[in-house]
Length: 336
Image: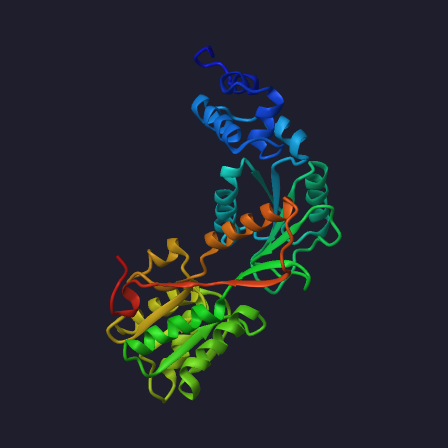
């Protein structure tokens, strides 16, 4: 009998299942030769007793530490935190812990954190950042552990995950066209950003010569300035605006309100990022493209786990789909 409150040991499982401790260990770790019935019996007894394998014992048996490092230069956490949540969600049921280290844009700090992760013998490293066309300031090539890149630039031979900016932008533009908007403008960030170019390219694919793109900063201020420019021009004013991010969209909507322009009855507005704290606080609430960063994190966790187990994965960029979250700023149907 096991006393109430006493930690269940592997020997308790072995005794209850009628097998040796060695057989119980192999059954729970998916190793060794035994009948399926024996393996299933041991696993069932372990579940009934609430057995939790000791982390050190698991590491000795599998030669893994069940830890993963996550390196980022996104100190604000706008992109990294949802990715981190997805990574943790994917790994928690596997008993794997995630260590987050922010290296800012400091190569020396990056090396310190990388060395610390290697000293701890992490099973793998996930590199993530704040833009897809800029690498972290630390060299992750030639490491003794696998590396997965998520929402950051990576070497050509790496496994890389990014959101499909072009697909998300097309969906937003097609939604505006479907609402009957005919004079649609794209107000977005600097053309030096790959994400800005990809979104603008998709916008032009949908709108053709009808579409007009204005590049500026990723800021509410630029949203205000762009509306001032458009309303001062002696040409037809837009009835639909697709913004490169939610901050620009917030500035656009505020600037339209200041001019007595009604959103969405006069002008439909769609943002990009679906930064919920910003989108929900905008008046009216902002329709936006969600990059599904948490799902991206879950996939990064799944891939780093597979690599740490010795599985082979095809290198290259994997684009995960975005989704349009419809709220009141564009008119039409709204999400439940």
